[in-house]
Length: 240
Ligand SMILES: Nc1ncnc2c1ncn2[C@@H]1O[C@H](COP(=O)(O)OP(=O)(O)OP(=O)(O)O)[C@@H](O)[C@H]1O
Image (cartoon, rainbow, N blue to C red):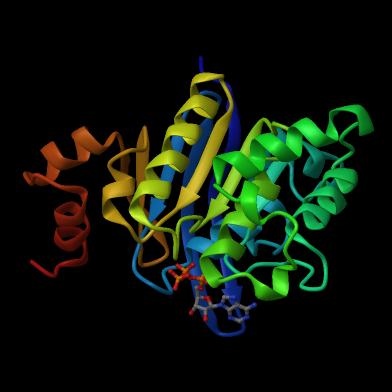
């Protein structure tokens, strides 16, 4: 049996009167990339925040590494990239990486190599000495992703990591995500880019507070009788 890094069962979440998640069942196993797609406002970020223990569920259970969340001790084993960048504008890119590297407990002797690798993946090596205040939106996304990659976490949770990133670099990032998967680590990723959903091992379609469909992209396309994940999405939404 594959080892479940994330196991969400019958998860429910309300904000006031608004029920955002009704019954979410989702697993992410070691050695796989799981994509989470759904219309804007469907609750993708909420699923992630409940999994991380940043929001408390109203029902069901969220386990990460077989442990009920929230559990702060586990955070060091995960790399999280939020939808909004949480960076220190007055520091340089390198100083931000160093700060978060120390927070993650990366040993001093390994720090420079870790920073160099993460910066290389997101093509920020030449800009590391610049203050983040002068970064473009895409550069900030790239720096946030580099921070999530620091320390080779067993589990990466990435909320729209490639927004504002151009196609060549996006491809480079996906190559790196593939390597991480092949090394037996796990990735949960949300995206609006349907081409990216095609690159995942399994894709979950979030609609009406539930996971409407969850399978390999090829299987979903066959089930819905369409050629692309975009068409699966449109058909499930009832647009077609
Ligand atoms: N802290 C909060 N308080 C109140 N409502 C919230 C809160 N967080 C999210 N919501 C609401 O929950 C719903 C789902 O939001 P969420 O950000 O999870 O959606 P999403 O699928 O990630 O959207 P997008 O693709 O646009 O990022 C939205 O209607 C949003 O307004």
